[in-house]
Image: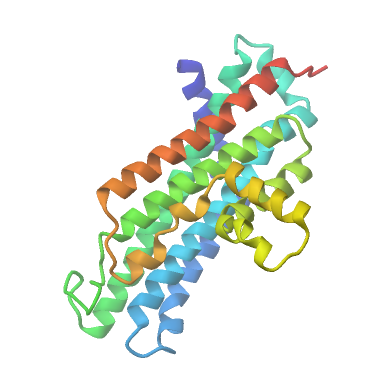
Length: 269
């Protein structure tokens, strides 16, 4: 466990020094800050627009972080042969993979924390601008809505699943192929229902059967998306949060176990 934590800290430190991660976070914060301007175009809906765009910015930036870092953690280490130096030390291969993933999850958590703080700062500024106290109700949703944290938490779980997939793919493929496959999995994971109903618009039985099979195999990432419900004041129950987080943990395990097996048996020479 100590080795895993040490590797995770090194990954986090490297990510903090990475300018690309900073650029992604600045882009997300910029979108959150610009959200009130977009809200002015929809009178009476400005707070909802700010929340929706801010959560979307969190999701987009987090996706960029996990894809960019997830495919680099193993694939680039193997390509640049730096993994040989690490494994020459008393580090087991499974510790290396788990440490890399824990560092990726820590980096994602840090990025989402910064963006969440920025989101609440923007919402507070919007409330001050409108002369509304920060916790006062603005029908039908309060400005500083604590329920936004539910959406952020499930965004973290969703992206942790995507990060596990990216790490798994990077153990046996090139960085480019891993990036493309991860993005494809992210898109397909949000359209599972459409894949199952593809027979309504496509006549090919093979294509529809393949799409239906993929919809049951790929993780259902749409289940983690509660942004619309939170923004419009619809309840997201604690039971739903627990069950969805548990399914996310199962997806992560389903990706990490093959990653450990593949990397442990891989010939790095």
